[in-house]
Image (cartoon, rainbow, N blue to C red):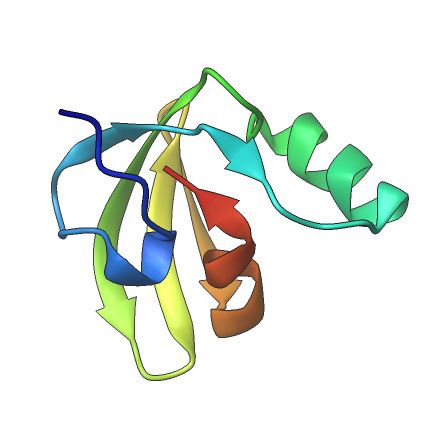
Length: 74
């Protein structure tokens, strides 16, 4: 069974596969792609923070805000 959720709902320290980036902003999509954040790539939530979360993509860590975390579907 496949469960679809946003990064805001994801468990910490568990690896997920990005299913979709739910945004119409092409500039944001290009930026995320440059970080390695695109459909089919693995992502791990390191920690949930008040304003968003810290994620690991391709052995790099990034802090993303709540709005962006809700746009990344895993």
